[in-house]
Length: 325
Image 1: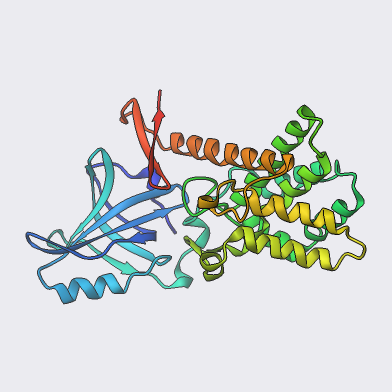
Image 2: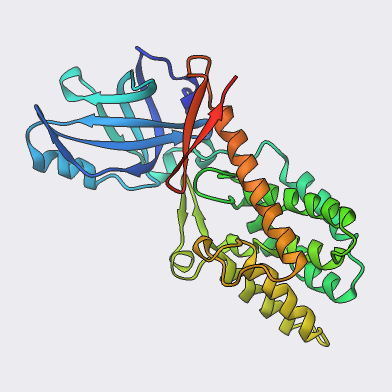
């Protein structure tokens, strides 16, 4: 049974516990031999780990190559602070070490963060907004997904992203619900916007993400996502459903496809088209608002009393400032 979580780790202590491997950096040389860095974590957060190895490069290389992202490792090491950040260090001279665990020796749910919101309650709320749609064709399309039990099982477990925002089990549903709620209020504020069209697109726009990630003890991109991307995957999923609905208007199908393919806004952010309809413009900015604000709030959750008044978090290579007080 896992007893110590990342949130329990204290500077200066020795620790013997299991964690999931989130990321790994290549082996490098230092004065006493070779070392490598890992990012490890559990459902409460992540922490860096530094393995200080011997001068035997082959030995260190063998240990490094035996560890893969997603593995759970049992570690014995110390806890120190480097550049203001807690980290675990493993040093063989201090009788430290690490061991990879078999898959049947741990509970996967201990190692991946979960949404604080109940997925069934979120889905029930999503249904309430779906019920506000009046266009019969939009209703049929939305229901083709929301009554599909196999799809719903994936939706409720999927993360929204690997890093930064809603990067946890249930994160995708949480993000979609936020976008749908905001869309409803935006459509009520701007009567020029077609409520049915915006709500339909807000519900559907990120369904491609159920095929974007493989989620075990870590969140990893699928090959399909790396080569095609979730917006195109989503548009294809929707097109397949529309083809199964007799009499679905072609102009409505085209508008929905446009909103899906343009919701990232800019080409460099993965949009196949820039938004060219009021509903597309609305969903792009709604989507951006939730991603940026949720990511900001998540980053603030990790702030401690020891942190500086202003900290910086990295998003897409940009250092974003956060006022912590």
